[in-house]
Image (cartoon, rainbow, N blue to C red; front, side, top):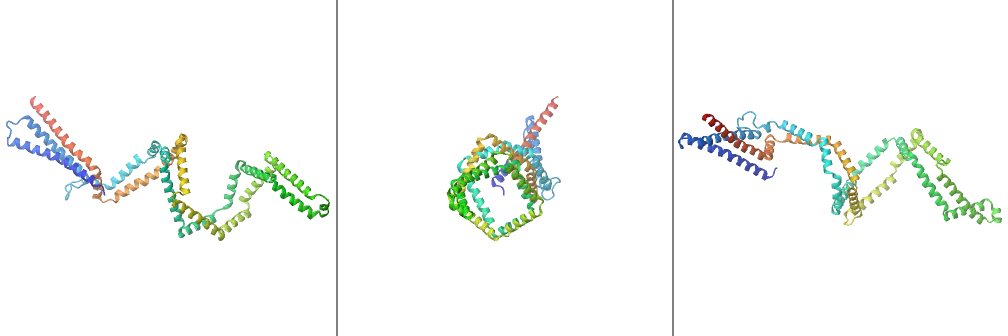
Length: 431
C-alpha cells in the first residue's frame, strides 16, 4: 500500500489540470455567448482571438485528458472505446518490456562494473571499519550470527544429518590419489628438505644438552655392567661412560651438521627416494590403498574418538556462547580489533584497496548475468501477479502526478496554437 501523500498529490495534480480545462471551457462558452448574443458590438478582433484560443485550449486539454486517462482506465467505463485502459490490457507486455529494460540498462556487466568502480567499496568499508563503534557493532553481529549457526548445528537432527553426510562422503572418497597428491604438493620444490633441516637442528640441539649426555652415559654404564661384568670391576666404567657419551654426542652433532650443510648428502638423497617411493606406492600399490581405507574405516567407526570430538565441540560451543554473551568477551573484542586493523590496512595501502576493488568488480561482473536474470524475472512475475486494475492504479499513483502536467501543457499549448492560427487568419484577411 503506497503512502497516502502520493494519493493526495495525484488528486491535487488532477484538480489543477481540471481547473485549467474547466477554465478554458468557461472562457470558450462565455466568448461564444458574447458573440452570438451580441453582448459586444461590433465584435472586436481581440474577442475573436480569445474565443479561438479558448476553443483550441479546450480541444487540446480534452485530447490530452483522454490520452492520459486512456492509459489507466476504460473510457467510457461500460462500453469502452478501443485502445483505452492500455496499461491493464497490456500487462504482460509491460512486465516483459520493463524487465528487459531494467536488465539491459541497469544490470548489464558494464553498468555493474562501473557502479563498483565508481563506488570504491574497499575504501568506503575501510573508513567505516576504522571507527571503533562500527567495528564493535559488526563484530557483535558476526559473533551472534556465529552463535546462531552453532545452535542450529547443535540441533540433533541437523547434527545427525551432517555426521552421516560427512561419513558417506568420506566412504566414497578415493584416498590414494588424495593422499599421494597431498604428499606431492608438500614435497614440491624440495619443501620437505626444510622440514628435514628443522628435524636435524632439533636432534642436534637435543644431543648437545647435558641431560641427554647424562642419559647416554647412564645407558653405557648399564650396558658395561651387564655385558662386561669383570671389566666393569677393573676399568673406571663411570668415566668411560661419560667420555663415551661425550664422544657419541659430538659424533651425532658432527654427522647432523654434515647432512645440514650438504644439499647433495646421501642421507638427503635417500630421504628424497624414500618419499618418492612412498608416494608412488600410495598411487599404485593395492595393499597401501587397502591400508588407508582400513585406517579411514577404523576412525569413522571409532565410538571413543567420536565421543571425544563431540565433547571438544561441546566445550568450544559453551565457551563461545558464554564469551559472546559477556560484555567484555574476548572473541568479540579480538574480532573487533581485527576488523579495525583490517580497515586501517586497507585505508593506508592504496595498492591493496585497488586490488580489493578490482576483485569485487570482477566478482560483480561475473555475477551480473545471474543477478540480472533473478531480479528482472522477479519484476516480471510480480507485475504479472498483480490484478489488472491494481497494476494500473499502482503505475498511475507513481507517475500520474507528472502526467497531469501533460494535460496542463496540452491546454496551454492548444490555446497558444489557437491564438497563432487566429492571428494568421486575421493577417490573411487584411491582405
